[in-house]
View 1 (cartoon, rainbow, N blue to C red):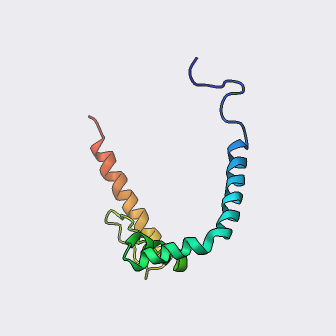
View 2: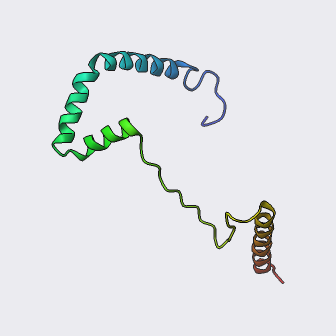
View 3: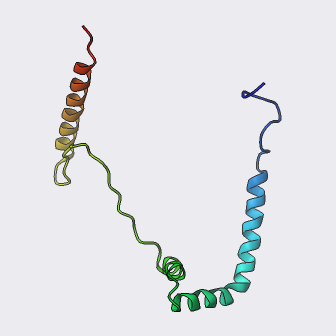
Length: 109
């Protein structure tokens, strides 16, 4: 039998999370002990021109730069200067136009 419910099947609850938590704790403790030599190596690599090392240092020290997010609007012109009611009215009109054009195309005679 494939799929469906099988008693005692699958990963046991909490097992992976428990192991991951223990691993993070051990790595964190070890990293605190070794942070100075690791950072010195990373800085020396960055000084030699290693772009990955430079990026890692900058990202860790000052955070990653914000990414630009582009949202396609499909010609729905709702501006930031408009009131909520104006934007809502334009959105309703755009939805009505969309529904009208698609229902007209799908009508069979």
